[in-house]
Length: 218
Image 1 (spheres, helix red, strand yellow):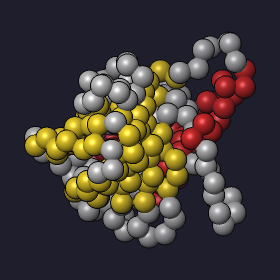
Image 2 (image 1 turned 180 degrees about the vertical axis):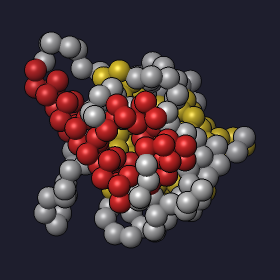
Image 3 (image 1 turned 30 degrees about the horizontal axis):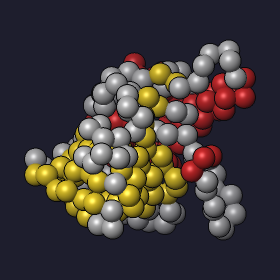
């Protein structure tokens, strides 16, 4: 399921040409069914009604109803809000049951969860299992393009390692320049932005360390 957004909060569309590639269309439909099943299962486990999840995650009830029916195509911000509220990882909403003890994931086999107008993209490669899972992301930021993230739940810690190029990391309004070979870590419960700031694309590995246990009730 590829997500393309003009901004972090606008509605998104699948990046699959309708009627052009039947395999891709089928793959996108299957991904949406997986998300629908996982969202509903996580909501039921948490003992939340659609109204309660809508209020806590700040996602409209209509969008949730459509999502649980595998209709529409949620953007990254919506998936992050739902995952934070349900106390699970983003990939737990997207992936089926784990297969085997070792997982090897190719970047080419993972569709971007976010793409920018200039070609930037973010791919969620995998999430580790256990009581405190870790999400592993691959990002490419084109010069001058940025992604602004909403604050996550308390206890989330992000780590950014730049492998090539240059980026500006903005955390709670303060800018930090990161070049190839530099790594930064910060608490994810404050507003933060990733921006490509060099003359060439910036490539980075980002990890999201999630706290153990369910999200607190609000």
